[in-house]
Structures are given as structure tokens and as C-alpha cells.
Length: 188
Image 1 (cartoon, rainbow, N blue to C red):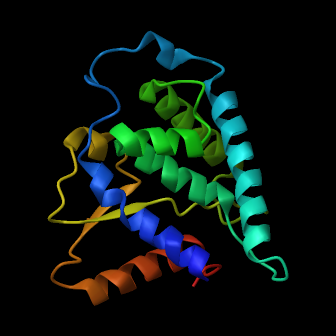
Image 2 (image 1 turned 60 degrees about the horizontal axis):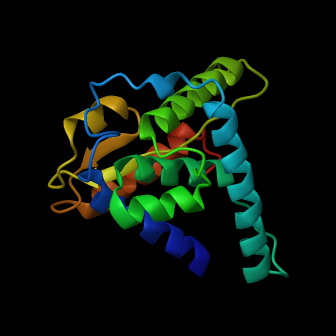
Image 3 (image 1 turned 180 degrees about the horizontal axis):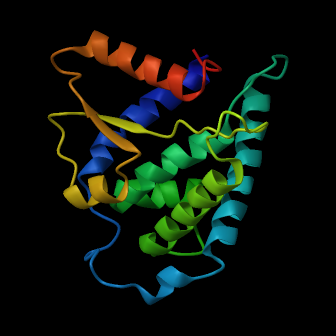
């Protein structure tokens, strides 16, 4: 349980990274490397390595317990934090997320977007489908925390601002309800 409390604390620290930068010095510049066809493959390989390392760490911390976790969601929330991070935080996330293959955030963002769209097309959100894939990757920021407009534009589905300062309890309930509704009651 301490492991999961640490993860929650880490995710809440995303607010620190929110104002760091957009993806590049000038997000309006077209990055020739952003069309890298291998980017999604490399991102997926990094996610796989991250997953295996996380499983190894969880097994070492809880050797005699059954544990269910979603490395996909954890990786993608940390990836969202990476997009807003800079300096030491950016380097730490790049290393932990196995992004050593590039230092160009627009390339990583493109791979993230391609993967997200591919999953949406493959699994759709049609309730009649036998298989559904629902991800609850979202960063909730306090309304008083500045988030650059370019980040809100790029991650409009992943970023939401709430009033934690004046009404923390109803915001907590809102987030819990959002997770429960998004996962069709699978996570409560």
C-alpha cells in the first residue's frame, strides 16, 4: 500500500512540472524528426522495459502478495508529466521511461498521440464491442496553478483544472466518480 501512496504523491507532484515548458522552445516550429516512423515502436519498447522493471520492483516489495496494477496507465501518466518537465525532473523521467532514444519531446508526443489514436481505433468505445480498452490517464491541477495554454491545447483530454483549494472534498469525489464512470464501474 505504501508503494501506491508513493505513486499518488508522485502524480500529485505533476503540478510542479505543469509550468515548466511546452514540448519545445517554440512549439510552432515544425520538427523534421517529429515524423519519425520508428518513434512509436521505440516508445512501446520503452514502455515494455518500464513495465518489466516495475513488475520486478513490485514483486521484490511484495513477494507473497497478489497485486494488480496497470503499468500502461502509470507509464502514460508519467509520460504526461515528462512533457511538462524540464531540467533534472525531465532527465529523471526520460531515464525512468526509457526515452534514451531521443531528446526531442515533439517526437515522443507524436508517438504518444499515434499510439493513443491506434488504441481508440482498435478498441473503440462502443459498448457493443466485446473488448473495450479504457484508460484513465489524466492530470488534475488546482485552478490556481498556471498551466501553459500550449500544454492545455495539446493535452485537452488529459488535463483538467479543479478547485482543490476551496472545495477539496467535492473535487476528490468528482475524481473518484470520473474514474468509476470512465472505467464502467471496474475501478471504484
